[in-house]
Length: 355
Image (cartoon, rainbow, N blue to C red; front, side, top):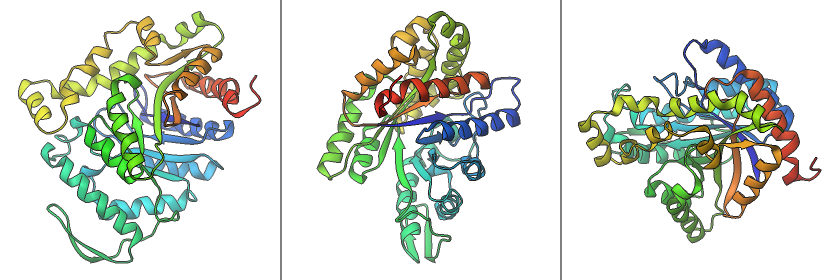
């Protein structure tokens, strides 16, 4: 099992965006030093409580110059909002500047991103499908033409080409069966959303595993959980309780832009029913004990978290546990503490030399 870190770059009110960005930069440096395998950052716009991560490729190419081995993953590019001919070259250049340490998540994106981006929601799936074909051809063919509904190009050459061949490792994520089927057929990795327990997506993950088996691929599920560690449960609660409440509230905050009934009907009709289900809002009503008890966060002593990971391994197909070490306005020192304790007290139990 790989061990990674996943970050949304949630900006609480009053927090300088520059300060948060440099804190994440330093946390990535620290993660590299502590032996984490990969650092994932989402691509997101418009809703600062949820994320200020508008250009993860820039962050990664900068911090790559200060790190040695950790890999970098965008989780995920919102493909319908991108020009795939241009994005292909941008990803390739970032792959070169990270010395082949880049990985890419490709998705339809959060429903709340489309209206501020002036993009019709119903175009998300067909644009996504066309963009995938364009990206893979742009990376692997010297020159190509494409005639689609939304993108039409003739004899275009995309440069540069990525350092990794045929292209960086690809991932996706979401809540719809069609996404899990596609990922399994193509041999992509798949993200489990950070707020949902394994059981909530067990059906979709079954679709993914079955599709992987049918097409000769090994399942690679990235399981994301906020984590906080200490030897004293009372100290843990004192240090993390407000931040874990914020993490849930900040994830649900953009839902406010989708609240009228006409919008909810549109979401259900156009393949984004999860955003009209009330699932995100319901999480904000949970108590601290419920959050911990339902394992929405892996929060506790190192021994407890080790046992939770051991139980997770039993379901099969989990390729990576990606911890969220910075969430809900958590102080920088607390994120560093989490990364340090996880690397020194938890990871060795799965890599030998447990302490």
